[in-house]
Amino acid sequence: MRMHRKLALGAASLALVLSACAPGEGGSSPSASTPASAGGDGASITIGSAGFYEAQLMAEIYAQALEANGYTVERKLNIGPRDTVQPAFENGEFDLEPEYIGSLLTFLGGEAAGDPDETFASLQTALADVGLEALDYAPAQDQNAFVVRQETAEGLGVSTMSELADADGAGDLVWGLPPECETNPLCSGALEDYGFEYGSLEIESYGACDAPVAQALNDGVVDVAELCSTQPDIERFNFVVLEDDLQSQPSENIAPIVSSEWLASAPAGFADILNAVSAAMDTETLTSLGVRVAVDQESIEDVAESWLSDNGLN
Figure 1 (cartoon, rainbow, N blue to C red):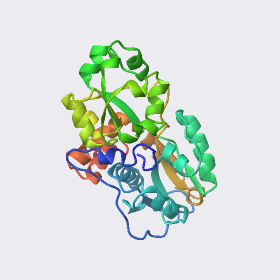
Figure 2 (spheres, rainbow, N blue to C red):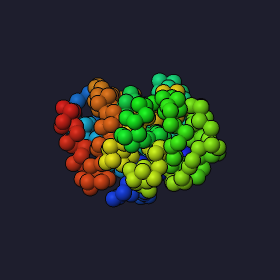
Figure 3 (cartoon, one colour):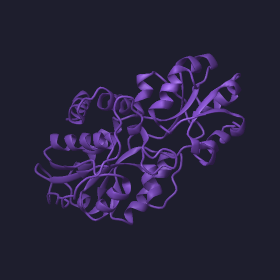
Figure 4 (cartoon, one colour):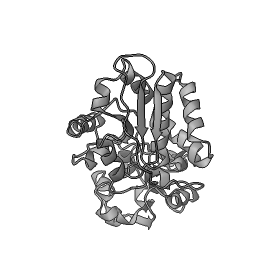
């Protein structure tokens, strides 16, 4: 999601049939907290987030994990888009925020790669220039993905984009793609990397990562759709996300970004708490949690609490 990708600026939060969560605007942010000078309970931290449900959910998960370990957490969630959140973060208005490593790196002027380790290393360098640092990234990521129905995957015997490109009958598929795909290197460029001739594809035009294209895929109007990889519709309709085996999309793993000043005097074990949370969060799980929040209308607080409990993290 995230918020800076050239193709899908709204990402999964725009993809819901029952509830769309557009980026919101926040009020003025509180001053950042000061960590305890030594380890132990009672350290205070302020956590911020962007204005879509997935960012808020990850921020709440990190917040509750810290609270379970004796931290006092002040929340400043749903602030708004990255161009509002990032300057506030750099100005010290909060101490921690969940982010997407590829989109944040691009926002800071770098170039994200398909390899998450490479993207993460470049991001750390960029963050150092603005007084921030990333902790371990999660397996979970929210990036552009090409998706098919179960029957299509089974009928063609495909699970990767390369296999789809080589499959008999691939030329007969109808694609649900956004209007800007033709000029977007992450869309038409990615397809051409796999050997598809964009100009020869049969295409129906839909907004990127939006509910109508997911519904069209489910209804058989299109056979392949460009969605976002944590879009709740993927689980709701039991779609198959085709593996991007050529890493044509930038890595968008989620990581907690922390003020370097705060981290320098953080209590012992602070990073371990958040790294354990990140390690347990994969894309499939984040998609399922998104269904609970955005489709089933469970509260973010309840979803965060139950997931942490199920994983022994609170």
